[in-house]
Amino acid sequence: MPVCGVPDNLYVGREYGEVSGEIRSMLKNASNAKFDFVVVPLCKPADSKAKESGKYTLLPSTASDLALDSKTWSSAVVGKLSDEVSLLRKSSPIERDYCGQALEQELGWASHLGVYGIILPPPVLDDCELYAAALLRMGLSGICTTQFMIRIPLLREEDGAQVDGWQAWNRLRLLCDQNPRLQVSLELTADLPETDQELLRWLAEPVRSVLVPADIFLTNKQGFPVLSKRHKAFLMQLFKNKVQVILQDLPEGPSAEGESEKYLHYIARLFQSRPAPTPQEQFEQPYHDYLQAPLQPLQDNLESQTYETFEKDPVKYVQYEEAVYRCLQDKIAAGKKDIVGIVVGAGRGPLVVAVRSAAARAGIDIRVWAVEKNPNAVVTLKHRCILEGWTNVEVIGEDMRFWQAPRKADFIVSELLGSFGDNELSPECLDGAQRFLAPDGACIPCKYTSYLTPVTTHKLWNDVKNYNDLAHFETAYVVKFHQAFYPTSDIQSCFEFSHPNWELSSNDRYADIEFTSEVDALVHGFAGYFHCELYAGLSLSINPDTYSEGMFSWFPIYFPLRTPVYLQQGEKLKSHWWRCSNDRKVWYEWAVSAPTPQPIHNPGGRSYSVGK
Image (cartoon, rainbow, N blue to C red):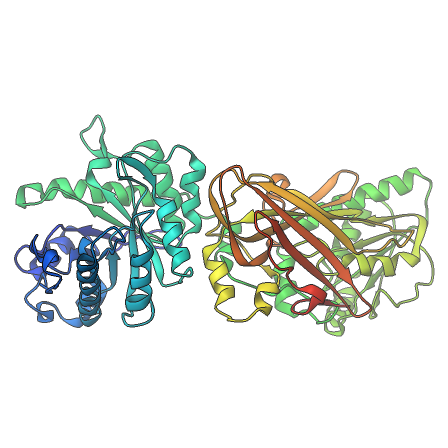
């Protein structure tokens, strides 16, 4: 039975060094000890001299596939391949041929058994080209359909030097063209990488399982096994990615049964000690690492469900109401009496409610024009006018850019921002609407800035790659990043817009932004955010540096790179950004020029644009 948790459960397996006796008995013992699956070698060790002969003979660790029924093989057994399958350049041609035979035969046997997964031996950092080629040829090309997990120790001794497991993994996965079937079985080691950045880098990788050896546990005062603070904190982070845990080298034998259970109980308690997800986390969970096309509200009419989702935001409209309240106070202080406000892009009316509430707090009567081009939302607005007694509200069912207001307004309120600030054409809309704003009128929001930072996101990049065309690599996506890593803590500003824009300055922009990597990393693209100033110091932000806690109306935006960029610690990543437009559309172009120049993405808006 898995360890129960919210929102997911934890599956824990036990690794055995050999199949001693009947595998059915091993499975029964593991199940009685509350393990969900076992990890066992699929083959017996070959004779030490067999490699010299150049001929590999498969010696299954069980008598045959009849040892278990197919359902048990496929749900309760993960198979380990032998170290013989790791091909090395430094080996002799005969040895390499022998290893190739071993890999092919053991993969064939694993495929025949239909095991739940396969764990392969770790690659050697500077000698994994033949291994990668063989994996692509014999396994990842489709011969074997089970999941592939490469055992990667966090740190490993190679030729007397300590090697970072991530470097070996990164080299192997690049040689395998970042094949999405290639996953990681991450082995915790007694010593951990020096910095937390090097550990957190693994949160963006396809870690399927975590191998936890018994010998890395400490013993507490009560005599129970526990993990060190850093091991514990890292494992808690990995739990967020729905990993499975495999306990290694546990005490064996009838007398050791109680001792083995202590390790399992510790992992279960650790998993169940996670804090319950907040309402915001519960809302975001279905959207984790899911590519969404940005909204195009000028081109398309939003659906009722989309409006309803935005209206549930517990932060946004509170801030808007306070911003309007402060604006009204300033108008009153300036001697204004007959105050008129315009809500542009009124949707189903949440901003109208915020404006009316702010006026009630200020103790004044104001007139409100609610301008909305979506005829379906206009129906709702008119209904609310009757239902909720909005006697001071006039609903205008027109496009704000072309409507002629009967008089100048004292303030304009809008919520036209996208995940990158301007990507839903807020600048163009407000430039068109400002003609009916009084010379001393205010825009809420009055300014917004987009921000960027490099991101490692193996899953999202592969999701884009799976479309198998150029256009999807030249498209920006709204994403709730989950399995992601940021090689630098530096989040830099890109484009800025202020309103009112009385000079009608061009909304086209260019920026070049340089980042310095704080750790060796593979960059799959850029994460984009915005920070918005509403009025008089009030703001809304999805920039992690200034994030509006509890707000969920916007997720970040993802700009992918056609070719991921490998950065070493301290290396510069130079990027270039354009916001372009013509009379029909607005689009972004982006490129990397250092450390290696790449083609400009989306020139002329050929793949992705926002229609006017």
